[in-house]
Length: 292
Image (cartoon, rainbow, N blue to C red; front, side, top):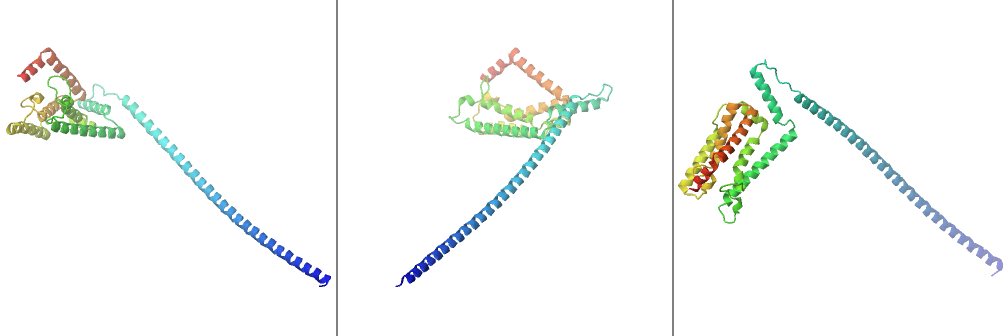
């Protein structure tokens, strides 16, 4: 083959190789452009996400601002309520009693209202707490009473929980006192109107308690139930104690009317009772009679 032909063939091959390389370079460029497009799309997505996050932050900031404004409003309202309470408290402290030449009936009612303000709570939250406390106290007292009454007849019941024979206070001695205390502390404001409007000594609850007391006494003798005489004696019991206590309370309410007088009468009665026990040897009489 002639030399010029070989030379032309080599040139042709070199051209083909150069074309192939150019095609490869074009393909690489296209791939680079595709990658750049993908990167651009990813950048746009990231930009959109950043925009959304910025909008969310803006909304959260607005919500925080609203919450802050509401807190400020609530603080202002609390401050106003506190100021009103202080004003009402100052007014209650500055109460001036009617002059001596006023009508006696007006004097009585005005002092009665003062008593109600002194001993009653104006805060609904405090009243709610007091009511719940009394409910739980009564429930605890009733459950303790029922369990002790039924369990005392069994051998496993501890002796130091039984009623005391001569002196001291045990778990079963608390029942009657706790019942009377819970009755005395219930519904403060209603009790004042109850005392003020009291007109009858005997009520339906007194009759019910008296019937229950007599029924218990008759039932013990009919069924020959074993009971301890040291608790209430032979003829007395829990229901008769409550009935007598409520009757005496009603008599005091009708005669004395005023809360302060009833309080003084209670203190004097307790002092006289202790004097009668310790100075007139009344406790020895009771204990000797119980032993006999």
